[in-house]
Image 1 (spheres, rainbow, N blue to C red):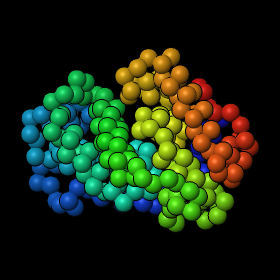
Image 2: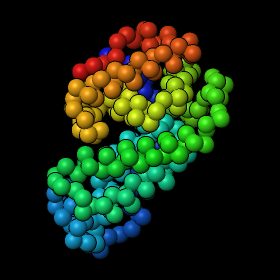
Image 3: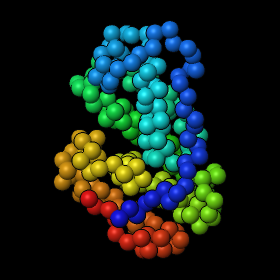
Image 4: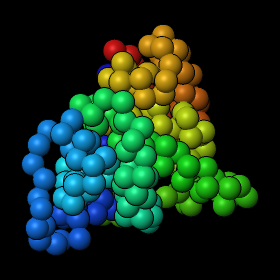
Length: 222
């Protein structure tokens, strides 16, 4: 069972994704991912724009699921594509472009979490100082549960946070999660179990979230 749902809330700090720069391309690109990677390597004039248009929504969703409501989402989205364009030569299989750019997005989010944590090292979260959920939910209780959820995630390591959010917010299969983290399936299961236990322990500080966890039952394990 999914214990950390978005519960019908829209992540409203997700920015509208429009075609890159909104420009008319004199040399538009059309082709599958394998052809797109080849075009990027060869400097096709429409390839970079095509990469953004094809994967901006996906990258944005991954970043928002991991980070929650963060004012730097738009800058991080651009950072992912700058890094991707600068390292396109490292893609071994062009047909796995989606997975590769997901890894770039996760690494970018992880680096941001670590930078953000350094700024917050003197801050001890209390319910009154938890991150806000701007306009995400119309239901107050659901809004508060989501706010407390990200408050708990802020107390966890970047590794734990990424495991939990990608698995329980974004619904990433365990096999993909293991591949993303460069570990075996058995290892990612152990890591996820440990992160889930830690989340549950910290969540007891917030009665509303603790009650929600008790109500929805076990964590999804398959």
